[in-house]
Image 1 (cartoon, rainbow, N blue to C red):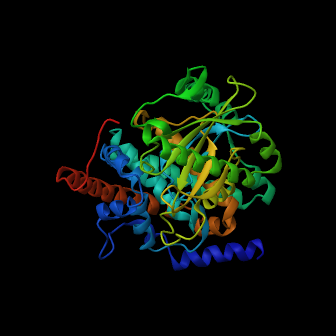
Image 2 (tube, rainbow, N blue to C red):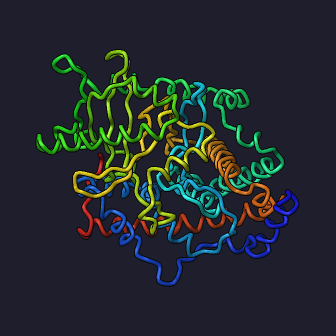
Image 3 (cartoon, one colour):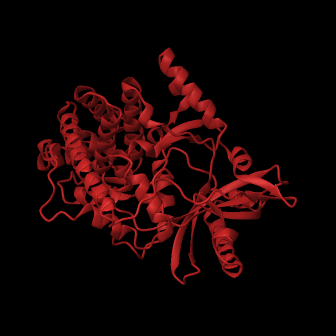
Length: 453
């Protein structure tokens, strides 16, 4: 279609689903028990790790929100949608954005979690981001007026960014990115100082830093050091025979994953050799999935590479897609949404030691990794951070969705800003109710929780 026809499609969608359709959230009739949904999602996870997951989720409504993407996905699927689709993160809350290195060794800011990536209505990601801002504002003790200002600023940032991308050419949109050094140069003195310090810290979080922190030389060889239950070498998990089976499985993942890399990166990964393997507990919502860190070395022991090999299951946005290759789904979604992706990013499907086929994706454990500590942000910092996340999300959607139609749907006034802001407040209320139900299930013994881990 021509740009004019694409804009007309967006305006037609606006007539079908006007701002008022997004304003409120009311649980659908027969809404599933959120605790039941969480339990159902955990059926194929490692049972010994689930108490850790529950302990992390019960810590606060925001922590619960981080671990319950499937609950919100079910709610959004039952609500009106614009019908305009893009590649979605699927779990676009505040803590799933961060800093990392581009292949050109520039520090950039982008979406950094794609376990739930799938196609869907673009506003699902935006609604999840805005509701997380509301929950973070409540957790940080901000007044209602302040929370509303933060959410409206983020909604406006998304709308204005999409309008800007709608007027750009394809290559200009594709090459757009949030370069941390460029961002710092545009900030005031106080904000620039904070961002520069965060960038310096992120640049120090690489494979060499992880190697020094997570390994030790034992009998002349580097080995991953146990820190149970969060980090457990494979030999400490299972018997000697089973340990060999698990190691063989992960070696098979790495061998097949190599073929999903570009030719030049295959040459690079071939220069490293396998040294050690350990299971690592990560995140909140991901706890219980099969996740490993693999230590490899290149020239010698002073040239380490740490890879994360993480299980990928069906996206919460497409729970009935069990036959798909979910490692490939994660990698393709990440490459499509991110301005630049990890050079070691790839996937592989293997048969596990339990005889079941499992999908994995592989990436570097750390490559200039930096994450915001949301629960310590003051009002101004959360306001600016929310705007940055919203701009970043709009850029990601503009690469895969019809940016002209989406911009026309949003229009040039603040009616959708206010509608999405009202939704965020209402959904934060629902999340607090769901968190209370989750805490009650733990108190009643329906779920086991280990806190402080």
